Image (tube, rainbow, N blue to C red; front, side, top):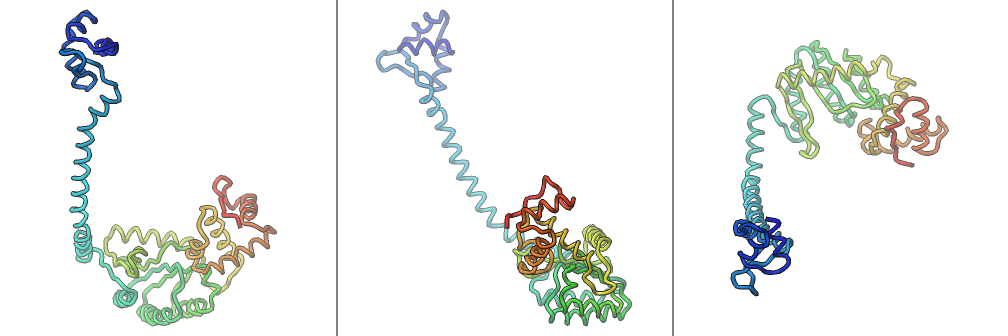
Length: 321
């Protein structure tokens, strides 16, 4: 076939002339070449053939395929639009199913507080809670009534707050009250998310931020076991609050958490949120670290931390400043 195409590149030929040039019948190859748009009837030679440029043949060969692709694309988009319009309905149905089974979605801060009050009122054995940030004073006061009722019934109450709560007067008073009532309090450098577990049979966890204020009430045993393991991991590594103090160990753990967050490239806002403090307070921590290590920038802070073995050399990538 290539041989036939080659002889036609020299000029138009009849079928017999092509056969003579290649020394065999050329008609089968001519038909295949014509199907590929590489040859066509010659205008200047009646009954003859002429070669077509490969670029022209490619365009002619792909034109039907491109049209087919266009049609399929239009059909795909049409199907996507129709099926996509059903997604909200499906999502709503799934939420209803989850509410009817092992997960209940509660929307709105006030509704969450009411649901938590109902659940806490039925707790009999233990409540385990992780709070990444301290709530406002008015919320703490409301929560204290629930805590009193729990502890008065002999419920084992364990709670973990961020280390930074040890420097907030309202938080200190709340922790003292809770300990005085019989609760067990610990603090940790950073906490991943709010978790409240009641009798290991139900849990309250926040909904994703993009869904607005709300919480999921979870009863699925597999999920509950996972949440209990997370709590146990946090609890075992948290520092007991025997006396409300902000000693060197607590301060050092906060500094290490800040360095590790800088290592990951976290923003100031993300680090402050994880520590349960404002960005202004975070920068005060950084300033204190600069002064103690006698450095002026975050880059120099990273070098000092690496020399001290606090972060790994290959991962430290602080924002300069």
